[in-house]
Image 1 (cartoon, rainbow, N blue to C red):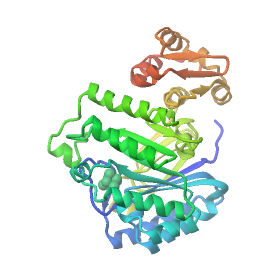
Image 2: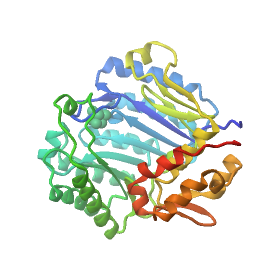
Image 3: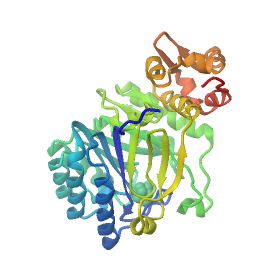
Length: 373
Ligand code: SF4
């Protein structure tokens, strides 16, 4: 099997100024000494990749903007030699701690995309889920980003929150449209057992209400000119997340930081989630899987069908030396008859309904036995 350099890099900064009620990510409350040790360790990990150049780097977390100005500067400075000339450099930010001096610093170091954790425009819902920002904070950050030349802004929104009504969510989507944000990502609340919500035994909203929220967002954003290019993502003017397209195109991506997952050279890994272990030991993985050809063909389909554009048959055959219907003939035929899939000379795509039921659709692809791979 050939080996390639990954084309994207994900960096996980595991600090948050406070912990949200629904959160089950790898994160700890901000602590300056730990943050300093993290940045030293991050630079060591990054230096192991000397000579690699990334088309996209995504600084996520956690909350990267929880870092103090000097530590954020160290992170941004360290990344510079690894960026291609036209790289997309994204930082995740929470409105309450993305101060103007941090925004200026980001602009100075070439951050050209910001993913902003807005979630909702109702202060009662923000309080309920443990977010500390106000709508005014979010609007100020968006204005300051634009004043500093960072126009490529994505907002995260959540639906299915406790007590959230359809009209609450409608207001949130309308606000995103009014702000002319070029990218919107929407997520249904999932109650994770290790979150504060999980410990209080809250349950998620029922499927039909969740479907109503989702359909409302699709209708409103589509009418406003957004392209629903991926199941949970919408873009204006082709401002898709280039970084996330790496995942959906099943290309290789590197990962640095506790709990970060990468895929490189037919191997998927998750770095140790334990932050103290991460800081005190060499690189440790909680999970490391060598991907078989069968795994990779299935995962390629699983990721590619999330996209409205679907899978380019030529890319599949270039990568696996097989045409996609030769591998998955039965699954494609069955789901084409249901109206969930369409196979053209160039592409395999899922219909809007197929993407809605992607989980069910993929079961047929899992059952395929590849005999001569
Ligand atoms: S949801 Fe995001 S900001 Fe909130 S605690 Fe989790 S990682 Fe931090």
